[in-house]
Image 1 (cartoon, rainbow, N blue to C red):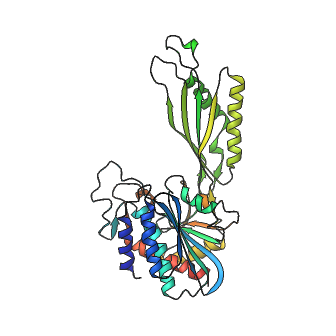
Image 2 (image 1 turned 30 degrees about the horizontal axis):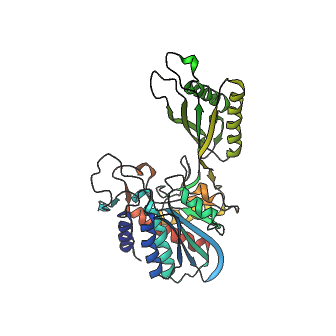
Image 3 (image 1 turned 30 degrees about the vertical axis):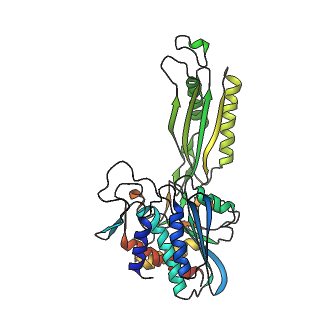
Length: 381
């Protein structure tokens, strides 16, 4: 499969409207393509219309298993008008425009094409190349979580996730822990607040206790920086003249490798237990609506060094490594009991993801195909 055929495939996949769903349409297209090249694959249903795809290419001899992964879902186009149809896959001035071009259908298709080229060359390598195309990365990485739970990643020895990194190498990213806390009170007329229990006032006590209990700025990683927290949602009250009986907050906590989510959850529960014991009529509950661990591969890991050399050889430039503040499917794949290196590496720049007029540089897409192909050749030689 040459570059022009690869670009045409990318265009056709971008034209599929897999907006937070309908990933089966992408999986069907890729499965048909793999079957044309005699590469075994299977679909794994997450829910109706949301199928994942696992393709496996075995080499001429046994050896390590190299994984490539990319998600098939894209975010909505938003309310701001685009200059072109977001799903037309318009090529202009060396760029390909469209929702998902950057995040991350170009990275996904770069892995698909690399596998096909390896097959066309006779699959003369020692080991296995495996593609895990996921659903729902944009919604708490639900698809990769299913694949991990069902054992599809158990045999991996190394993994490249093709998220947009501007063809630089992401070796670490933060995790996410999102507590949703709800306080409960009792309604009363606003002129008689003593007859009620004010859930908002109790939530203020929770938030003060939160600030006193946690100082995330003290947890720092040399690659991804400090852990952070952001109070992003607060809801409460139904009228100015009614004492509120319910208040809910959601907090976005981004964690580093040194932090243990189980311990953080225990601290939250202890904080609420203390308020329950000391504040009259205090009632609260907590649930964690997102719980994804951080990911980190060491800079001196042999797979990191191998990948740096490959990227440098293809691009002709020094292959930089860096840490990311957001999370990827790597959070889920990192839950596999066997430890293996995970790298984030793909075409496109993250700053253009989720934006109007999203695009990817076509040459970066071409380079990424070659990089993926050469990583496989070097690791499995």
